[in-house]
Length: 335
Image (tube, rainbow, N blue to C red):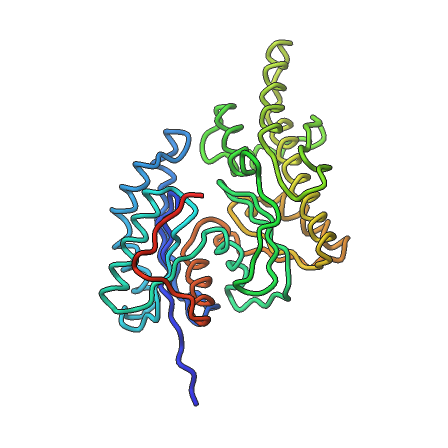
């Protein structure tokens, strides 16, 4: 008996990326189209929710058409529609969910709501990758920093999260304070390449707290106070050293918390995801540290670290084969 292939149309509009993808059998990316709004929001120093929503409305239909065309899969062959319905910006989420509902209704196909953070975990399963269960997942994105225990696909528990700023937010806020531009992560990473990561000893909040939660607000404040003090003393501000030292503090916090969680739950596999995990210094530090501690480590390809619909389609596939679909009264949630 020949098993029928399952094609999931994934839709992602949680923030400022309009993305549609077609995923075959949960593992194979047939297409993954991303319409970025980065250039639009740059002049504001961050994402403007109202503008993001309007751009999603302009982009979503053509992005979906391009995804289907690139995958060479007609809409009638789609098995189900998976869409992020939270967490994220309310207006942006509503555009994606409304579009997904319309497509699912018109085709009489199942509708599947997907959690944005969970989708970042499953980005690691794409391209036929096999990962031993259970594992700990560290998700580090612009709006979220979370440690998640994954006992099985679809069986997850959040065991640690940020109490204030996420790591990505800290990068963006420091870059904005220093007038470096947006988004802050890639700019700080580039400057840090020529800096000394040990030049300034910034604090590592909550690393000895005895729990798995994060805090980056105090680190951000420490950087600002350092800049103010340097200006007061009329010292030249060495931006590369500042950026390298700040970046290293973030990496150290993430590493320490991840190792603590792995030891607490007696797990020897860690899976990373989210936009900040595209940072090369972070990848190198995690790879070296986990190898030293005999921990298996997995990253998604860099193009699947940032928000994308491929990870949504992958997550939707596993929900679909378990029969976990949603009704048309499904709503969005922001946090």
